[in-house]
Amino acid sequence: MHATAAAIIPAAGSGTRMGFDYPKQFHLLNGIPILIRTVDAFLENPEICRCIVVVPVEWIDTAKDLLKQHGLNISRVTVCTGGRRRQDSVRAGLALLEQTVDIVLVHDGARPLVDQETITRCCQAARTSGAAIAAIPVKDTLKKATEAGQILSTIDRQGLWQAQTPQAIRRLLLQKAYDEAGDADATDEASLLERVGIPVTIVEGSESNLKITRPEDLRLAELIVQRNTPPPSFRIGHGFDAHRFIDGRPLVLGGVTIPHAMGLAGHSDADVVTHALCDALLGAIGARDIGFHYPDSDASFSGVYSITLLEKVLQLVKQRGLCLANADITIICQAPRLAAHIPVMREKLAKGCQTDTDAINVKATTTERMGYTGREEGISCHAVVLLQTRSRE
Image 1: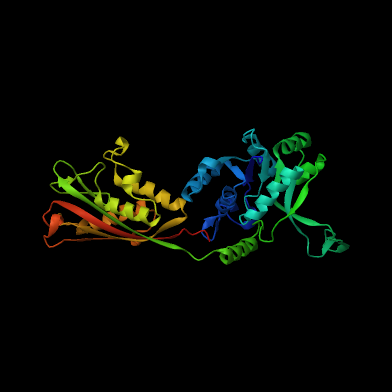
Image 2: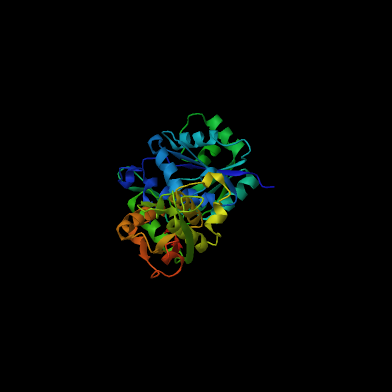
């Protein structure tokens, strides 16, 4: 049985060299915050049971909100406050780890392009030797210079490595290093381990596992992401729903209460438009229908506002890495007239789907008094959606 591994991601720095008025880890890298990309990489790795994300105190709520917005499994993430130095932030994260965690991986919050193979290799090496870091061999000729910029000597690069993260260490060894090093400054965990005589194994990292420190690093990272991003995939779904008219209920369509003598029968608010849209979304991801997820046998859904159900369905869509490209909805009813209410319906449905109003089309038609809708016995609705891969490029 593998030892349990967790990641600590220190991201409490200010990133002043980037020239932003906010921490660089919250800057967008091709549409996704750098920190979110970093955390996501570790949550995707089967070796990692938990992530501790360490951020400045004033950015804790923002970090939590971003994790939710981007569909990450927040049950496996703890966000906490960092310290003045990197080692203070790591120590804060270490204190929050369960005693069952045996391997700790420390990774820079501003290294969003770490690959799964590097994470796994570091874990495995730490299990075998106790401590390991990702690093790449130095390729360029190294010069030692004076403060004035004059070369003093050429340094032999044989055996020299450029340290990266993750740095994976058995938890008890890392705790020992912190305890024995006291308040001494350290640029990374490996230097702390060296100071107290704990051997560290080098695992070859990746050239693309760069740390974003300067504007040119961000431009290079953008190029790497664009090169590695697969073309988007698409899913189509169709939904249909119908409800009969009854007395004594409000008529709710597309989240909007419509003035009318009768409402629609149903366990929830009987919003036939929103139900059809929900079924289309669920159909596109192969997740059955709204009745399966929110059955009329469940009293907690009695009279529920259906836009709330739409928001829940959208979370299922996002968990599969998809988002709504567009929806086309056709309401079929003889009465009431809906043209004046359609703009507000589009706004409410778009908000529930976390998209622009332009992505939601709603139209109403009649059956020229044929059938149950023509006889004004009820209302039906068709919805067609196109889902696409959620942007992580």
